Length: 353
Image (cartoon, helix red, strand yellow):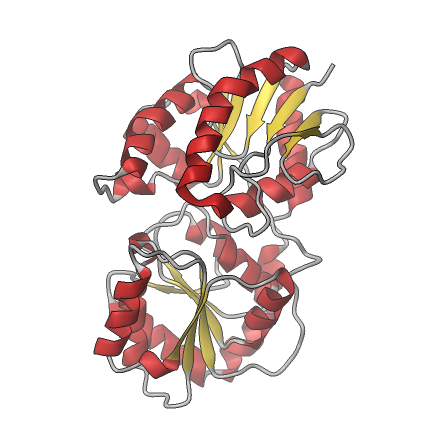
């Protein structure tokens, strides 16, 4: 009997955010307890092959196909394998079935910053139904747990906060020379607050400094950000990269002067954790789940105040002591988060349900 099926349908070849979480949890959980629904044919013991075109790599069509597949085919797989639970690394599970689901919730950003689109419908109707139906809702931070209870009235006794992790084999201090640039990792969605980051950088009186963005382009947001950089006359100082390998990401994090994550809200903030692990100074928003991740090892800013962000950039650029203390305090803070502990916490939950 397979005790639990892990919904790996979100995992792709170029993972960011939830995809990274899903991939690392899947590889860390015990094969004795959890069988992976595997889109990449990884060869994990006990894994079950599923279609490979349902991740964000496949765009809107992939998302739609995944939601249909979850609703249509997972109940059959649960019954066929006689699984007791479905474990999903995001809040997606079949509705109106007998499947007992445990889902991981990351944030409620489309409800916090609503815009009329398909994502709002997903978060406004499907996601609340999944969370209320779930046996348990795992939350990536106390901030996420609070907002799920506040916005969606999911009972507190169903909400369990777990610490996520980072791959210490992929992110660590390289002790190499740092170049004059600030790094921004992630998508270009409005809650990332990138216009204020651009405005802040435009005030930085450092002629040789660059601002490097690494994250998938989005036709809804990226062009306007690039136009804004032109309006600020800093277009020649901004570099935009859609995606980089883990090896390249490690180099960028170790060579930058600092990571800027000045989001209006983050449920967790994985890039901040990866930067800490590399001993890189982190300029972090004081909102959402970020303070739970970075602790006292970051420089906090008010995300609504571009001068606050700019002042922190200048402080990092000018201070050798910040670079030195980050190399000590960042990795120490990051050690509080690891995928093995995340997996062990989830395994204990499964065993004791």
